[in-house]
Image (tube, rainbow, N blue to C red; front, side, top):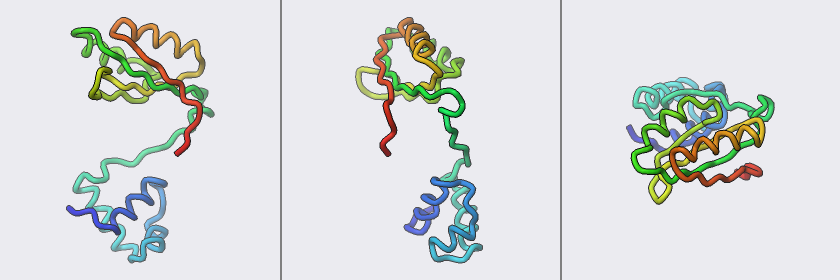
Length: 138
């Protein structure tokens, strides 16, 4: 399935607000509501749209501290690290990446103490390097 300019516009509207009414997308894009609904259905069937989600306000949930950690893995520790990360509520995402650091981890925590605790545990698997997020600019 091709993703033409109209589909890209639809996807951008849905990315910003997955609950936007089809009628509102229709007005923005300039197609009828049934045509928009059909395009969305086809993109779902093609796997372009995999799911719809919720964007959380982590500060209101008590997890205002965000950090990114890269880990340079010790030999044969990858599987143990991934198993450990899957059990940690602070872990939002983990990516295997190229370069010297094998993993890029997004963490959310309520305090510096919680963050320090999980980083200390990461030293069992490799050498962590942490960056604390000051603000989101985009």
